[in-house]
Image 1 (cartoon, helix red, strand yellow):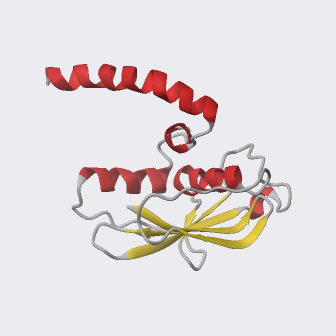
Image 2 (image 1 turned 45 degrees about the vertical axis):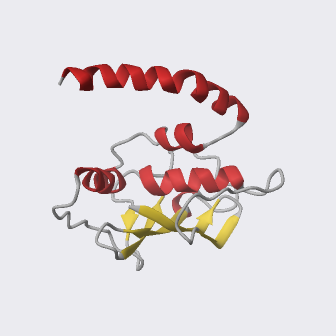
Length: 160
């Protein structure tokens, strides 16, 4: 699955703001201090894994009103628009605000796992910022620890 667009429906200081991520590829988001770069990253994390219980992004909108949407390309070539609302369960909605139920087909395991992450929030939301937030301090940590993690992960795989 690929994120094609981010829709900040009610998130942080934003109301109904869209970030187009087409054409598909690598995108660099830049701007002045306090422009909303970190808010957009937290919104992507919230969309994928669920909005954090103690998010700092409820300063304009009330906690229960927080919403972030996104358009995703799915493996069969189509697309799906999903909305994540702030809450404890059943937080993934379709375009019309109804609970989104996945029909998981026989796709590659990684797509199926991504659908499960989106639907059930199985990951804790820390992976995405660790991998893609390229602030200087995190970049330094990644450049030091990531090769160590790859070696540690490779050893059990080599034994199989």
